[in-house]
Image 1 (cartoon, rainbow, N blue to C red):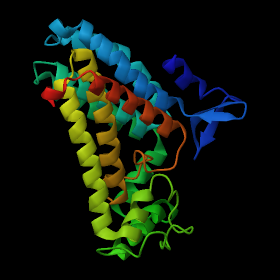
Image 2 (tube, rainbow, N blue to C red; image 1 turned 90 degrees about the vertical axis):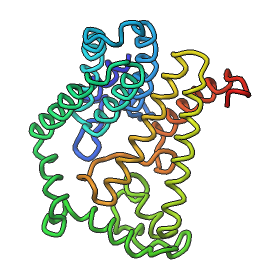
Image 3 (cartoon, one colour; image 1 turned 180 degrees about the vertical axis):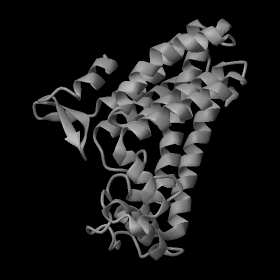
Length: 286
């Protein structure tokens, strides 16, 4: 179902454009992003599949079977939203890494993943332009504008920021300041101190999820928590890396902080699953 929904975004009249890419489905007055559904589905599907193949996870054949099932979904998402495809692929790799007794296979997986991303960058000219804007934002014109404005916002915040709600850059200077670039506004209003506090909160959340995964009563529950943990960790790392000009610009939101409907609903669903697994843990094990 998730695969079919991701295909429907390319159907005229059903799929809607976002910044030149088909990423949303319009069903009457309701719009949602099926790639967000795909993230949750991949976590649940791989947890079931890996549990069934748990005794054979050390074999290459098992990884190939999982790859054959997972890659079509990743490919169809990557055609319009490479960053989300990378997140889905990262979730899958993290879950397989935890379940597999042999780590040597993952060197090949990483190489194939890099090749996959490279091919999709080459097929879309605007992705190459983003890399150029990342390398030289000051000479990239409009394409480097968002990066520069974000860096100005971060720099102007100083150590303790201008104060909550006192950002000037969010008043039209930083594009998507409520979505992808919200971390820059946090840095401007709360400074380096506030940014570090926010990152520490994410570290605390991820650490608690690690504790739950380690103490889950079965492999299925543990893998669900690992998948949710990988999803949140990857998005936090990518978002902060983008706004601090560590990697090229790409549309990744900051979990639980950025504005959004579909993303928040499915992030909350994942947290509900994590809490469900946590509920089954005996107190003395934590």
